[in-house]
Length: 84
Image 1 (cartoon, rainbow, N blue to C red):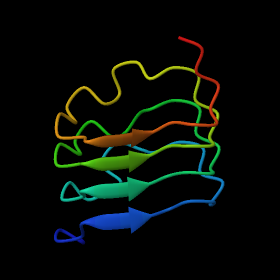
Image 2 (tube, rainbow, N blue to C red; image 1 turned 180 degrees about the vertical axis):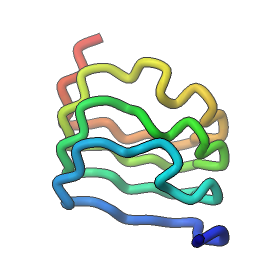
Image 3 (cartoon, rainbow, N blue to C red; image 1 turned 45 degrees about the vertical axis):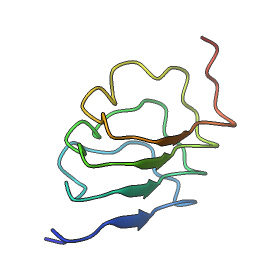
C-alpha cells in the first residue's frame, strides 16, 4: 500500500518506535519529530530517503539504524539526548 507516497509527516504523535516494514519504501521525506522515539530503528529499508527529521525525541545515539539510507541530504536530530 502507498507505494507512490513520497512524504509522510508523523510529528507529534507520541510514537515510541517504528517497526521494520511499517513505512513505504518509496519515501523521500519523513518527519518523525516531537515523538517519544528512543532508538533509530525500522528505517533501514527506506533507501530512497533524502530528508529525515527526528528532532525532539528521546534518542541517545544514532548507531547503524540509517546504514542503508545513503541518499540522506538532511538529517535533523536537534533536541534529543545524543552525547557522542
